[in-house]
Image (cartoon, rainbow over the protein chains, first blue to last red):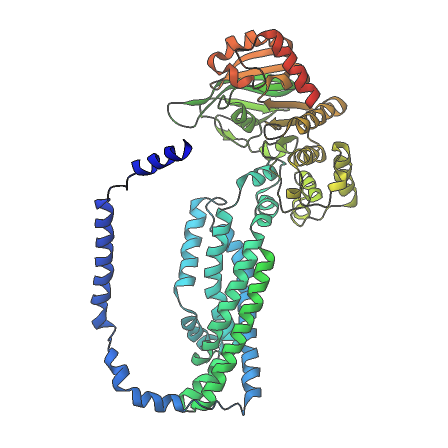
Length: 270
Length: 279
């Protein structure tokens, strides 16, 4: 009885009719994507044949990298350590600044005449690449790691303030109301009601930015802002490919190591 | 002494529907008043206006608490923050900060009383900490003081919220559906705690409730609301089921969650007794 019932139910079922509107839309979307790729072909100077034609040269070139020359490894390691220290200070200063800026960017905490201008300021911090800031600061404070710290500080403040404010805008408003109802002032509402809620996310974002700042800091040296990038740039310009390979291996190892450590820490807090 | 004095309060969230409709009422010191009504009748809205968390319409409505204006004509008064320190609010969802410890949550009750810089840095004196612990002991959850608030049960969190108002030294407690998300046993404990604070400390309590049974058991006076207006204000003993049905019409079944309309009066009493035994 039961089984016959279920079979008849299955035979009665029908496939939904094809939705022409939807398939039309997806066709248009794909056509659009392909058109954009085709239009950009010329501008990007796409020459896939060059890869094949010059393959002989490239093999010679790649040959120069092997074996990597680790003769000066002590310098590489100490320069890498400087790079990490640049990232540490750049990130730390950015975190300190992003806390107030992040709160001043949040539309559930401050009125629009505060968050709009602060958001635009953060946009401009974020829009300019670290390398550009680094070049400017090299002129302002001279060659060396400090210029790199300042560059990372400004750019990362722009990024973290945005991420922090997104966390603040997603909070549960009820505990904040509970704090307000005790007669607390606005700052205390933030300290006791908002920050405990967003702290795990904030820590996670900060660690993530530290990871990417270590990566960014490895190239800051190219414009004279200190660290391993300076060494790398010198070797590439002088065609010392074996040494270049060694430096690149050091960078890969340290960046991967820091990524793993920071990922572990991020898992701990969230 | 008048604790709450509301006159001509209106509130419209949208143009055509009034959440509060010409509400005027007075509450005297030491009273424990129940605020009843169906969902959407304006109980929570009224409580949030008294606490100064919502602003009324700009048509002359006024709320005074302890003789101080908290809002008038749609504007929160300058001194509202000072008055708020005397008002403790207990919310349906407890509104504790779940990642802070119970003790810290209770200590935030002191924020309106200690210097701002000290409160902001969470620097509370030993005496203030003792005061918070004493409040926790009174509501019976002092053994959970160092736990994070989110690790407590709903009933315990609500009692922690009451401890916050005790620590605050509130002379008026506004409880917005404090037992709506609790089981019957926890509900009794929370209502008993409010009742004790009311009798022992002479704190005025206004509590909005979903179930009329609790209003009758704990509060001498009941204010009933419908569609944003006060439709009954008097002794809770006058709240007979027939009266309420007349008052609330089609919504009465919602008010009597424990007593459906079609059950004869006699068996309804028996059912209510059973409910007492089980809680």
